[in-house]
Image (cartoon, rainbow, N blue to C red; front, side):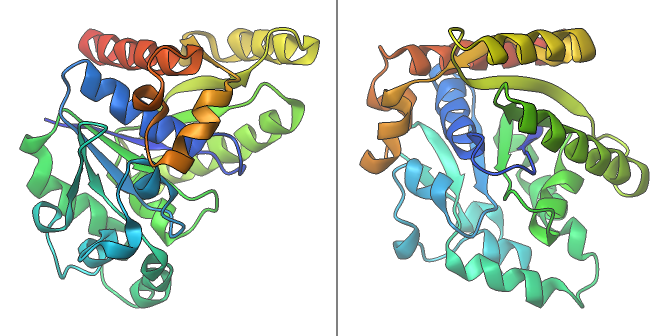
Length: 256
């Protein structure tokens, strides 16, 4: 049975897509079968996986509108070693088209049930806004991985996300919970970041992942080459941290 996780944060620019792409590649490196679903119309996770979003014959849009199965619409990230259910600008139209449809927030969940046996992990890269697309991701998932920077405004965004997860848990998906908080773009030389990191550990305890992703130029460069950072420069500190994070994820799941 596949473990399905949303990578979500209602604050933009916190490294959601970087985390989704590199965790997918990291899990593939430790011999897991992975599907990465891009639920953002910008298609950054698709492009970052080395897949040309403009050339896709079918995308997650077709799956949400029930005109294709995941098995038909997925493509392979040859560099990353995982499957991608890609997105492009067409996906923005799905919001409008789903408004008057039945089971509109459960379309992705239903599609994933048919692909359950094919994967060990399904990672869903959600857009920063709370939209029908994000809702489809949250209703499908067993849990949420929250990438966040150790800054004051990130804490405010986190409280909004926790409230959203509580609402979805209460009304639509009783399985949904926060799996863990991942500290990203971390620079231990900045005093505030160290302070916020400590606050997170005090408040959330073992919900804070042990792995910390450092601020790393090579991770930032990788998408422009259409590669996950883990593949682009495996020796970089950021890449090694994501592989370590993948190992921690596998260990966590094995322990539950």
